[in-house]
Image 1 (cartoon, rainbow, N blue to C red):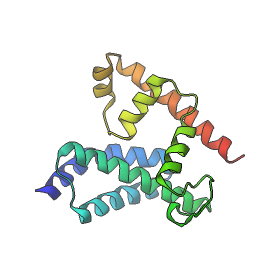
Image 2 (tube, rainbow, N blue to C red):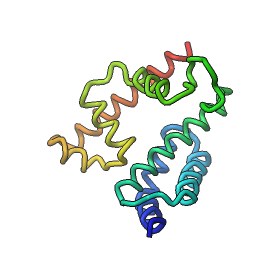
Image 3 (cartoon, rainbow, N blue to C red):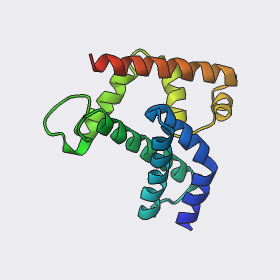
Image 4 (cartoon, rainbow, N blue to C red):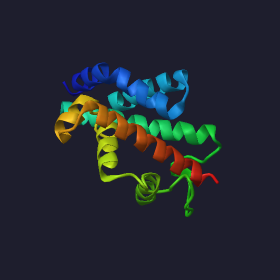
Length: 159
């Protein structure tokens, strides 16, 4: 039953997962591989109890796989192999949280809220608009601006 929940969530979110991976990796083949790897990794663990948990874990694992793939292609070291350094590749959860906060510097509270709903919770624009009491277009615009700011912050790290 636990694997069925994961499978149903995966099938329902497969296109969104692919778009999320594609936004990060910029390569369709790599994005498809990351989506498949996400499902396989979670399927092997079999530790999903609810539909919401399945949805959240799918997006979280996908995000981490994409980050790892980006590090490998850019010559950066995998997060688990970095010791006692603070760089673009953080070496622990606290540094990873700091890294994520640095990337979100300059975002408004609303942009952070919308970005988190989409990236971490896998919510639809319509769901977010309903939850926040704003239009779908406002959600799209905020997400677009948030992505641009995060991309700029990331590019500034490499300078």
